[in-house]
Image 1 (spheres, rainbow, N blue to C red):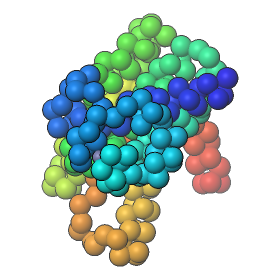
Image 2: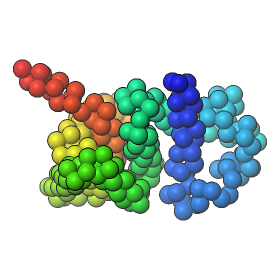
Image 3: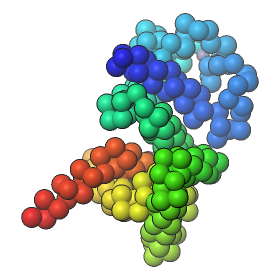
Image 4: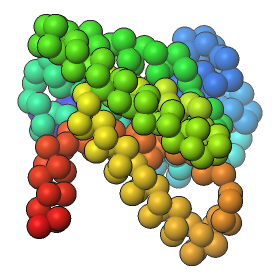
Length: 248
Ligand SMILES: [Zn+2]
């Protein structure tokens, strides 16, 4: 079952790659069929096998030899692992499907933000609506309130940071925090945002030490929110416990 879930995740990852490339450019995800971004040659099924094609072609286009970004491979592998984690956490349940959806959506938003510094609003809205519906179906009115409270906490905290930082933080991050809130509820949303700053600050410091970035360089915060949100979604209660234990 793990192998099937992994393969399914890699196929969804391949689809995400197409979305990450096409949607910010305003290209439809169904038409035209897959093509090489460089030579525009149409890709055949054997060029599109997730993970395998990239490795067999050594990361180059079969037709023009242009190097294909390793991020294509990364997204396929990452999505496969996100599906596996969801499966190990929820088993074959309805929650599993929703978890795969939420984590894939976060991955899509993070990758687009990383490449373009843009947050895809429509993806945020769809994610918020489905998150609220999920909790309403699962826990009735109580679930609905849980989700709405998360949205208010997430959007509220990031909006506050946005104004305090004089707009140095992106406005799009408010939307991502609201999305995370819809899926995590009030307390875990705070944990996720805290984690995002912790991971973002650490990675940012390393990038400066390694001279890959300069102080004051732009670094999108969306991907860190996505990472914080994803980890907390699966392991939120464990993180809170760990934190209290750490404080003694
Ligand atoms: Zn090509």
